[in-house]
Amino acid sequence: MKRHVVPGLLVACTLVLAFWIVASQHTARPFKPFNLTHADFAGYCPALEGAVIQPAVMTAVDPAEPNIAAFGVMREGGRDPGRIVVRLVHGYNMPMCMKIKGYTVEPVGGEKARSPNNSTTQQLDNPSFQGIPIQLWRVTSSAGDVELWATTMIRSENFSVTPEEVTSMAFPRVDIPDDPNWVPRGFTAEDLKHPVKSVRLWLRARWNASRTDLLTFLRLRQPAWASDELLTYVSHSLPPSVSPEREPLVIRQMVSTHIAMLKELQKWRRTPRTP
Image (cartoon, rainbow, N blue to C red; front, top):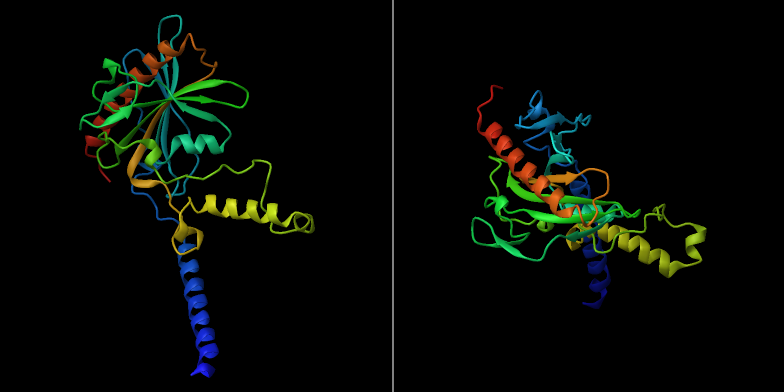
């Protein structure tokens, strides 16, 4: 009996290794194309009374590209007309994405307002929200410049709002952001001088690349990508930096634009289009 243990273990290890190789090759396949892409918005530009809207030029042609459409909105009149960018992106975790890029992201306001299904979303208790769940964020660059962002998760099918929070999206999600000055290049002679630190950095990068998912880390599951069913609807202010004194004004302008543009997009989504 004992003489069969070692051969049995070798066979078992070989089968496990073969399974892992096949599974890892399968998970390395390209991401599935999205049903809604930038091409669907060709020639479309919404119209808002009292505003000039400029569609953003997007050069990506990859059908698996998460970015769908973007519009620059300039409100006319007044001393501070407001410059807002409105974007549609396949469901992604905006706060985490900006943190990875080196920004500090924090929610604005601590009050709670009710969304249509009576769940709570962190947002300002502002009647201009018109029952639309909006999360407000203060995004600060490493240079100290401040932008205000508004996010709402909507369904790709009809652009209706959902109670989902943008932070629930799996892409991108990391445990601890990587050091922006560290680039993984495999193990070099320099790394061997500090093996513990090098292995820790490599494991952290691999763990972050796996979206903090064990099966993905083991290459048994494809990494989480942006959602095809949910879209992250984003509005954010443009420079100059938003001072604390200007925050209430910018928030009102941004939320107003966020809601008005969403209604226009919903109207467009309901309109039948010829192939």
